[in-house]
Length: 273
Image 1 (cartoon, helix red, strand yellow):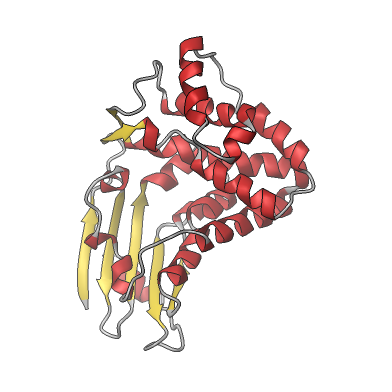
Image 2 (tube, rainbow, N blue to C red):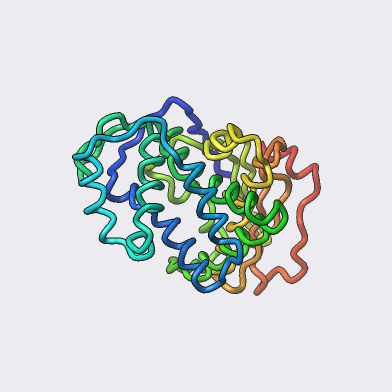
């Protein structure tokens, strides 16, 4: 068994951010596309509640609004609902604590913590608005279906080996370069394992005190993306940090070689340190 260790968790770390690659609410664009294909009966109530949640504390100056209005024109669904699109962008800037709008194509340093908060909280607000419109269970079901649909429509690089899922091979820059402590392993039988003990996105979502929403936002997509990378792959999990547990335990199986999807017992995870 080959063991890799990634220990770079640092809540105070800074990372570079360009707003032209971050600010346009692409996830909201995806969500509205999903709503178009899978109508939400309570959409009007959902939209009104989301606008209420997205209300900012301090208005932005007119010259900044003008810049953002021109920027939103390059979107699709957001351009069709400019009020909602603008509300998402303004709330994102507030979450990022960007006091003065810099040139959208220039990079500036921001804390990795705020980098995650800027988009994770928007996702959480969508779930909150869905819940207000249709109830808790229906909200999580609808959001979960959206996550599955979004991944189905992603264009992703195919993987030939399950070990390509391991962070040790590809964390070079970005916020996660400062945001995870984990132990990874390539098992002798061809499976791959990852035990995550600290995760910055999970810490950000804990501010909301909503483990179910945190799991839906951060974890649900892991299963679908695994099979998107390779239809022969399957993911099983042991615990989840988003649900308040002590670690996340991932096992990636390749059904071309491992048919039974056997998942290691507790002792394996205790000894994977």
